[in-house]
Amino acid sequence: MLVDPANLTAADHLDAAREMTASNRPFLAYLLAEEAARLTADPATAAAIRAAFPDPNLTREETD
Image (cartoon, rainbow, N blue to C red; front, side, top):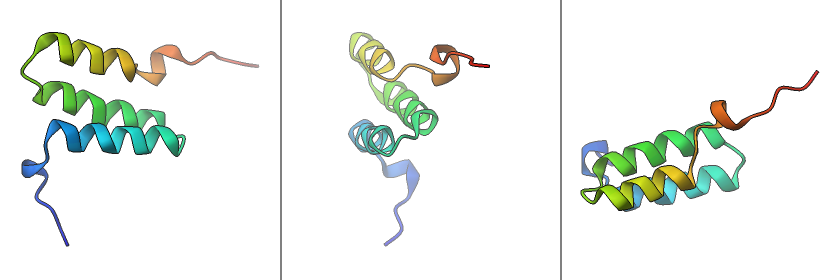
């Protein structure tokens, strides 16, 4: 069954972000969490979502 992405809620995006984190896909988790934060009306909740799923490009460490 196909789902229209416009019908997905912030909770749907957060569930998917958690699934991506569990399957070691941090960038996809970050993108899904950003969309969840965008759909969230409360700024404090949006900030908490963003804090829980930081941009992996800013947090990774380079190794030689």
